[in-house]
Image 1 (cartoon, rainbow, N blue to C red):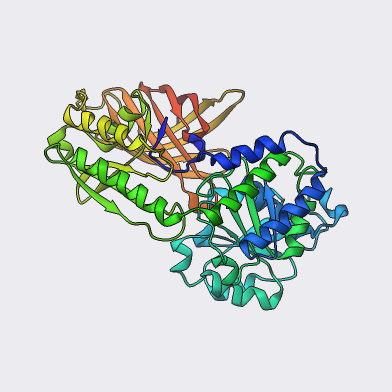
Image 2 (cartoon, one colour; image 1 turned 90 degrees about the vertical axis):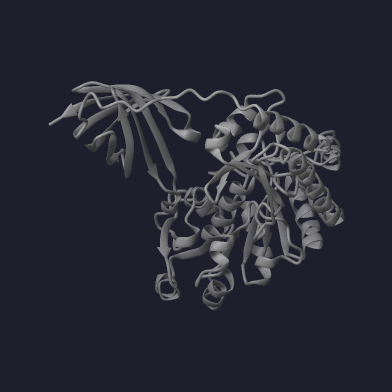
Length: 469
């Protein structure tokens, strides 16, 4: 696979630098006491980054969990062995501003804390109390442009002795660290993204006592976090990635990425009706230039999503993203995980696809054969279990709207019916701290429906439904 999409975990993030691979190989040839290694690596990370201390975790998510545990239990073994049962603990809550609710906060709530959502400075001040373990923020433009930006939060939390943890997973590593300088107590990074360390490694940087406590609450020590084990190979490989980060010529890398995009642009613009736009990044996350390749979908009879699927199914396989702008469809090319020579392959394959798009079968919408309005009991068969959900549907012509009630949450539903063929989609947005996206396809009769369920990252299931009432 050629990665022209970015550092997505599902396509294995980034490729480790050669120096990182060599460091891992060297570490794999020796025994070491892991507490001693963690101490030495933490001190060296402090020297390299300017933070008080550092920790290598088994990915950024694990680092968030260890940092939360440090703020909850402070390295106390009596408390550690009871996590995630926080009954009798003093620190039992984590405050998260609404702008930072996201799917990755599961790493925080895994410690057993109660999440308290706030949206204003007044709400933040009112929420802080003896039970507050920390405040968690997901770094990004939404935070920087809000009333509750990092510095504003730190001005409130620091005098009260409440730690502030910043999740900077996809960001570049800034030295001196921008988040710590803005008042954060701790900051966590993914190791296998822009830093190009091991995919299963992460970094926690910040206040020494809390970082050391985070190590106490991590593997190889027993307790809830034993499964988040980081080996000597990941620890040394991650340290080498940071060593290389401070040595790498980032300006030269940027110039190389830009030249690759310019090569792709010059090739695909030879197709009539195709335009390109070089896009510069905003913020620190996934900081790389990118190329938008745009065209009129009706003229080329090709959508951006279809182009992405075709490139993904091709040989060689190319991963990229769909995009749109000003009524045009297209694809987005991200270069910073590409390897030298990939730009020529991407340019040629995309040119061939745009020059000769695959035929698109027409699927005319037919009048509905049944009215689905009403209440439906939905049986879902997962890989190793089943559950009963409920649809409340309203149909107007071919359009279907309503609600989808699951075990714990209700989400809006919308879709279509053509003759007896149905397609519904329900969505539970990330702003809730979790994200669920279900797509139901199948066939409907007067009193029953059945088909396949696409659950996105959670793979597939089967579903059937019976009308009730």
